[in-house]
Image 1 (cartoon, rainbow, N blue to C red):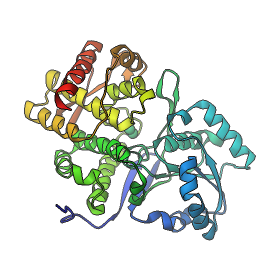
Image 2: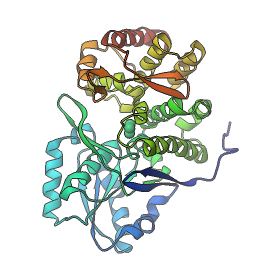
Image 3: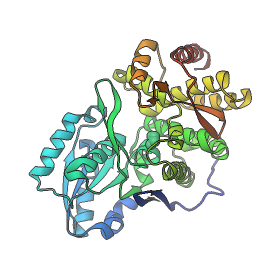
Length: 377
Ligand code: GLY
């Protein structure tokens, strides 16, 4: 069942407008082979540093080097190990040393070439090195295309939790080439799709329903045009939210739907290789359950959300220790004035922040997850 009818041509540019800086998100198939042309207007003879991990460096390093050197760029690479283990202050210190050894200065420009970890670390280093240098996001995973690369959140982890140190620091631009998706394992696509469903669930019911209708095709990467339009729609939702509330003092908090319990699950199960989006999908199930039980989400829309999320081929959750999840939640940035700001859905496409969700409610939602896993998988 081809689903390419009525989808737009695979290229678009969106804008993120924050008080300090406006920048574009360019989405275009094959964009990587023309990187020199897109970045050319920003090249004034300064040094450029591409941050990536060794696997991507091996696969694309020489292609990037040739493309940019042929366009007159002065390029260096810095690699960091793949995965969350790189999101540490120790790794950031190592990177500062390498930047100094390579004579980088305030005019140096960075390119974050990779998934969310590379993007978060590069952004953090960009925001602090020499009090701030410019950087571009070139995301290579679906998750980072629709979430981490847009909006300027940069971070590293501490032993007690994820993303506890960071800055808001917008990139000079985001360049998305959907061709990278073909290099990803299906679990990475599913992980990104969970964040895409989140965008629809919190802000756009029509987009949510359209994505759910095409979920199987989208996950199988069967047709590029719908996939690109889906990425564009998710980025547009995020771009509008960030443009309205860059520093998460209000509206932007709704992007955390599924993330309070999701981050708790991700941290509790970090040794099992659970991916961020997979944990967020379970987090959305838990938050959807609470939205129905203690908020305004109707039975019909709760069923719709639940069925959509169960369509994702998620790894089994196994036994979750509620104490571990709660220990993480206690350090969550979503606490303010001793209150947990928990995102509930009022309806599909409309989210709000509740201060009424307690630890007892979270345990109840975790129990719901444990019960329903045996019923629904
Ligand atoms: N990932 C949530 C945000 O960027 O606000």
